[in-house]
Image (cartoon, rainbow, N blue to C red; front, side, top):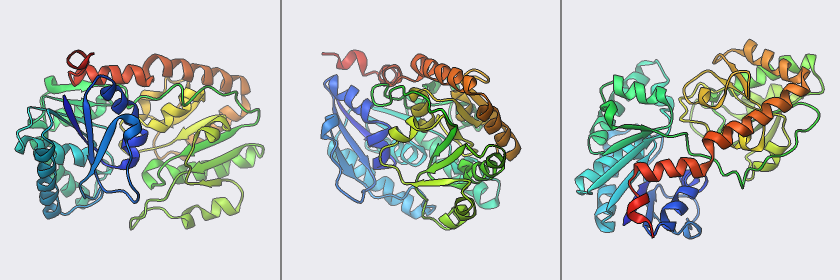
Length: 373
């Protein structure tokens, strides 16, 4: 069987779906990934797949551009003539599912891996964008056999908006994490709090910085680290927003990290105070696999990763006081850090192991039995 996967970024196909590609090709299927053109070449041969480029912007809000993307995708799909098209992330789901239906692909599936900014804002512009997105998604969903979600909050919202019936929905536990690549590591003795993220306001970066400043006064031995890249779009955070916290020594900026494993091993607690509409944050799963306590928000997607008081602490979104108190609690209790780290690893093995998640994905896509050798 030939499978075509429509993806939002080359990073995501490499780092979040690589194990899924390998699982599909190991069953004897042919896989073609389709997505935006990257800066460099794309080589998916290690996963047994190949890549085709179709230009579209992750952040474009131009409906005319949307039309041309759908047409371009339709052309590629017709040329490849796949038996199944699977798309993930909002725009690829809308574009890919509509284009696959136009190309008369017999089996179409989609996955919503978080609702992002589109469903998080309350401005007139945000509401208008949601209206357009709802229309595109509804059309795309109507072509799908099943639509996969990573958390129940997103599933419920899409159903309540009337975009698809609940009996077409399925749930999986995020993208899963490789327990071989992200192996348990001993906790350092002194507290180190780490966030690795695309540096957006909605990821809670400024709340992290302010809480770090407050906690650092009381716990000068603690370190607070940020890793990740700045999103180069108007209105997003820049290094100047972080500068007061960096210059005071309250926060360390690690830059864009190519390999996050040493930094996860070097921290005692992983933090993601996000109020972005996450699916299930992959960075948290990586930290859990390494055996780290988690501090994150009681928000869709994020809350899936924490059993309150067992492997981490849930804080209210945009609440610096909650975050500061959580920092203090884990600064003061090394035994609690050790206990929560063990529970994170246990929970990760139980629910988020990539082999478990990919097994669920293959079953939903109907590939396990049909592709077995």
